Image (tube, rainbow, N blue to C red; front, side, top):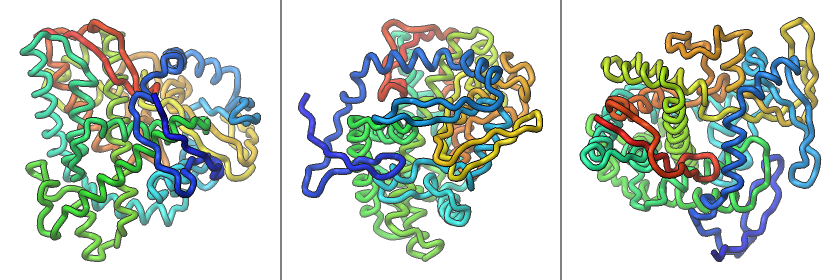
Length: 452
């Protein structure tokens, strides 16, 4: 396959790629992030053996292990945090432990809006704009919309052969329709969800590895997303109606319409760049992380009959809170993202549970494992037991501190709504054919067989 040459320039910690002046932008080619057999194999092997590795690290190293990796042509020192109390300490200390996303975000969307902001004042200003665009009152209607779409998808499969692809027929199309309808970004391109996944894979990569192909495709995907957002904004004719972008009955405005209306009222004054950056970031979160959550949940349900039985009973009970508890307890055994990166801004003494402290030097890349924290017996009672009645404090699915996930409440309602019609089937077993992945991380094909 011919690829556009795409020269790189280094922009600080994240090494954001950019085209040189006059060079054509990279083309989006889905296959470039699909045909990675060895990388997928290595990623799956690592992800399936993280729990014993983390257990060993929690026992061998009181807080962390400092180790160099030959990364990007030079030794790079990492600090790995695996104990629950220390993971929370790092995530809650944004003044010292900075997120590394801003240079990448600025390279993709022109702004480090929200996710790239470590200053409390700047982050709070961005959060205020986002909170107005995504009020909690939207969640019940979003959940009903997701449930309707999911029920139609599972019903179609049940009426056919019983063979069903959890990702291609359920997670990806439903999340994509929610994203388009709710945000107000009407895009017909089949590759729309893959643009989002290319961007997300590039952003969440924890080591800071320079991958020219991943960078090219993230930039191409981001450019297409920004173009779609600009076209959608141009279709908004007046602030009293949203036209074709207002697709969910029960919601008076799409998110885009709310943002444009706020802009026209000078209510928080989000400029066009802020609107584009916010919607770009949300699209790159809703579809990829939703697909990861659903894929990981179904994978664990197929592995663990106790989890499957409890989740199916919860689905049949008609109690959405019980179903949510079951599914997010399942997700604790294979979280959406197991490790989150931070950059230590200054030399820091991180407290240990025995009263001592551990030194972390400035500019170290700190990797905090929320997966390890959610299985740490020092703070989690019987961590290897499936227990949907655990307290909320046992979970770190959505992070903690300044950069806790903005969409936590939406995901908590929408993911169970999508999976409930599937769980209502009499039997769900592994289907014929191999699973496949996009960008080595995101499930792309996940066949199951369902019986009513």
